[in-house]
Structure formats: structure tokens, C-alpha cells
Image (cartoon, rainbow, N blue to C red; front, side, top):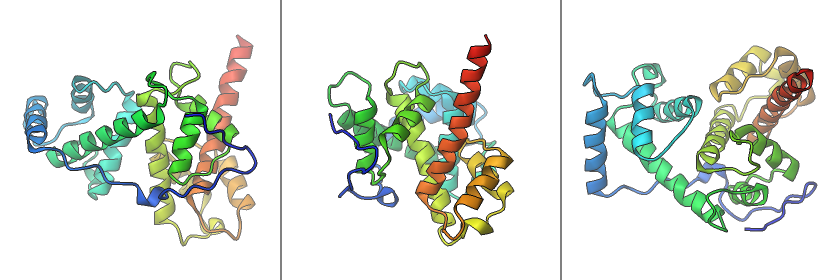
Length: 248
């Protein structure tokens, strides 16, 4: 893909917005049976659930290599969907494991579509195309910052695992915005904003939380605001990393 994303006037998407993401297709019966066998093998204590460590092993067997923080976020998302966040320490049951696997297969298909030159990685323009097709008119400089955040190996492109990491960030911000879509920004205590960001794996300082709230008075919380908080937090982190490098 070679779609350029204008930094000032992003192209409007005719595609479904984030709250209309397609659900993963149902897996064939034989695939589900195979997943059940794998689940039973990995569930070493036979409690009907696989915890974070067991899920890491299961994903590696399936060819997926994610950092633990990404695995933790994927688990939290599927537990959230089943209203079972209290079971985070116990882990996923079989249905949730199958759902996660199905979702990852959908992400592989999506990534394959974005990877126009089929080199196993996407650049900022290809990533921009994907985000715009999800109904997210982000600017090119924001896309580059998002890439810098999830580009674990610092090669200037995003591989599949990194793409999934970014996707889960965006999904969490979407869930937060949907839950608080009637909330005025000024009515959101800074501590609550920090807690919401922490759920998505984003740390933001008290000072920046207050600054964000003051700059968005009169508005209801939306997805793009949450993305803005994310970018603020990550800019702080990147500045800190650069400062440490300069000290060395």
C-alpha cells in the first residue's frame, strides 16, 4: 500500500468505525477440537483455565511470540468481554481461549491485507491505511509515534506481533470511550483518568492528567481524546529514554 496520510487533513474513511469492527469468523469444528486438545495439554493443573504463563506457552506453540504485557492485555480484554475480570489471576477458560485464537487469526488476515508488498512488516503509510480504514483519522506524526511505541526491535516497521499490540491499545481506548461516552471530561477526577489509562497499560502522570482535563473542559470523553492521552504519556516516556541515552 502507498496511501499517504496528510498531517493536517486526514482522509475521511468510508469504512466502518472502530465500534463496528467485524467479529472473528467461527472456526471449523476440527480446528476447535485441536484447540481443545492443546488447551487440555497446557492446562497442567486441570482447573479448566490457563493462566498467563500457560497462555504464553500455548501462543508460542501456535507461532505467536508476544511480550508478556501484550499477553496480559489480550487476556484482560477477553475476560472483560465475558465480564470475568475478577478471574484475571486464574486465566482463560476454553471458550475464551478459542475466542482469542480466532481473534488472532482475524488479525493475521487483516495484517496480510495491509502488508501490500508481503514482506512481513508494514511501514507508516500501510499502518496509516489500516487505521484510517478502521475509521481513525490519525495524523502521520501520530502514526509514527505509535510505531515508535510498539516497534520493539526499532527497525522502523511494524511486524505482526507489534501490530496486535497496537490494536489492543486502540481496542481498550475504544472500550473506555464507550463506557464513559456521556462523561464530561471536567467531571473525571485525575486519579480516575490515570486508572483508566492503567487498564490499557498506559502510565500517565498526575500533572499530565490534570493538564489534559483542563484542556478538554466542556467535552465528553471520546476515543480520540483517549488516544491523545496515550500519545501524551508515550511522548513523556520517549523523552525520558532519549534523556537517558544522552546522559550515557
